[in-house]
Image (cartoon, rainbow, N blue to C red; front, side):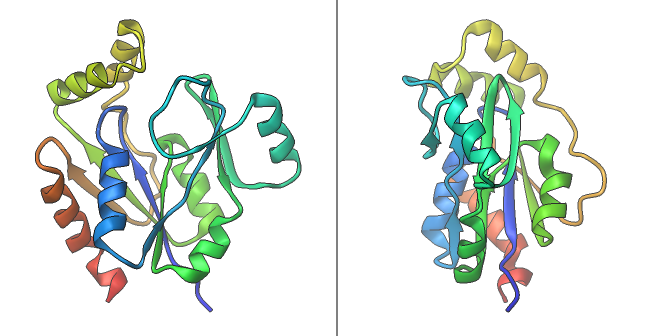
Length: 182
């Protein structure tokens, strides 16, 4: 049996990855979302994730609990091995990844589609400010990284501007994914 593709959603902070992923799952019954494990401190919310301490994360990593893990922005992120079960049950599995681990993710998962979300700089700045999770200095640093390119060597990339209406973004993604779900 062939495993369903992994759809990696990437993009700069504030681009709306979580909103897009939530809307995709709501509109496409065969798409499941994977919850990441993150060492994000208490009080810092955001996406639907499993919060663990750094020590617990490292213990999980040593025990082989992650199909993929990486450090970013002073935190540790992990994709649980649970993803294999989801890939057996779903048409596709969505996961929020870092651009810097996409090639590694493609090596690990094989069938990987990268959805690269972009947005206009003023839209990103407004969204980052509204969520209030980072200091002004950290927001500026994140905005500076917003135009970082995707790594070379990816088999399939869908680039979508999410500056406008969420429903337009989701419709465009679903239209571009159509060959995979047919």
